[in-house]
Amino acid sequence: MIRKFALVASAMALTFNSGLIQAKVSETEAAKLGAELTPVGAVVAGNADGSIPAWAGGITEAPAGYKEGDFHPDPYADDKVLFTITAKNYQEYAEFLSDGQKELFKAYPDTYEMPIYESRRSASLPQFVYDETAKNAVMAELIQGGNGVKNAAIGIPFPIPQNGVEAIWNHILRYRGETVKRFGGQAPVTASGDYNVIGFDEELIQKYSAKDATREKLLEENVISKFKQSVTSPARLAGTALLVHETMDQIREPRQAWTYNTGQRRVRRAPNVAYDAPGTASDGLRTSDDFDMFNGAPDRYNWELKGKQELYVAYNNYHLHSDKVKYEDILKPGHINPDLTRFEKHRVWVVEATLKPEFRHIYQKRVFFIDEDSWQIQVADMYDNRNELYRVGISHGINYYEVPTQWSTLDVYHDLNSRRYLALGLDNEEKMYEFNVDLKDREFTPEAMRRAGRR
Image 1 (cartoon, helix red, strand yellow):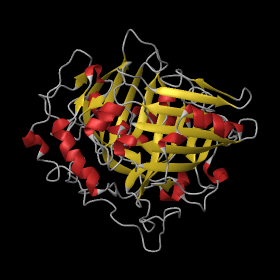
Image 2 (cartoon, rainbow, N blue to C red):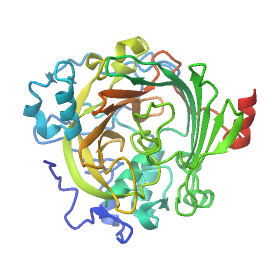
Image 3 (tube, rainbow, N blue to C red):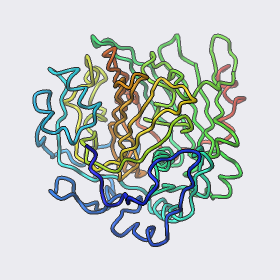
Image 4 (cartoon, rainbow, N blue to C red):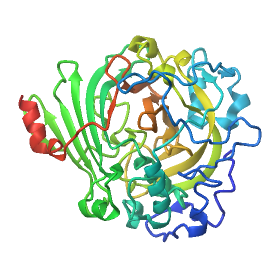
């Protein structure tokens, strides 16, 4: 049962569809940000029994000895496991687990575990992001149908969300630095534990998050982000590339995408890189809009903000992130190695997305559990067209404290029918992410993609 918190007032319109007119947040409500609410809209106070502490600013400086380019040392390395949830005792903690999490205990009763640690509210962002979030609170608006946002820039657009689609836009537009270059890949893992790692290089320009972004400029240029992904291994796939321009107003202009195929040596428009089209080299284990737990246009679903609940989520997973760990240590039959994971109790927003009758998608319903401190989706339960649990996505996050930002280090998508899973974001054997690298718009064009492919 979802335990509602007082922050979600009964007067709010919690269900969003294209015919609903939304009221803006009042100045009085917005004044709670930085007081009883954190700058991004979470409740500052801890919970009643103290198992969730008060937010005290999150991580505001890196551990001693850390320098940019290093893998991130664990600031909580001395923490010990409080207890472990297993198939034998998970029902004792059922109110703090999603339905999908419960299914994982049923599916792998002998091996799946959740080691529970002290809750550390480590999420933090730069001050200028907090400042812009406060402005967004009273200015940001959904574009008709919820398929875009206007009058918002840099910060969380709806820190006091009035409905489910506002909450999902908070996830989509959350701050993850201005530019980033990532090295790593993904591995589809069979039921017996066999896998091949698909290597990626990725580059991302967050136009929405740039320090010089303005509400007017974003509306005029209509681009949230530019994303480029190149396959580096295995050799048979190396050189295959994807380019995506994500738009702010998806009614005016939907997502623009292109692919480069090494065999044909051609760049092609790729309008199918969206919704439930299979994700790149994922062996059919995730959809395009599963990437980053959810991305893209929200137009195929009705969105309901169910309230908040306390949930055990994968948080501060620095051990899993370590360069001392190899992929073979992580990737095990059925699921990743639970000994490398860390779960904590946190408050999450619960958003339920139900497929509209006039649209198709392999997921008839999705339930998202979104961290109140970072707006990162922590867990996603996906249901098929029989309304049965089909897949479970779990995001294992850390605070990249050189930015700072709370972001996933590894996303894992479990297919409950095939007993297979996809581990996306493997980086332990690669270079660490580079934030605020010098990336130019001219590098994110179909022409630049073509030139790179021919070199």
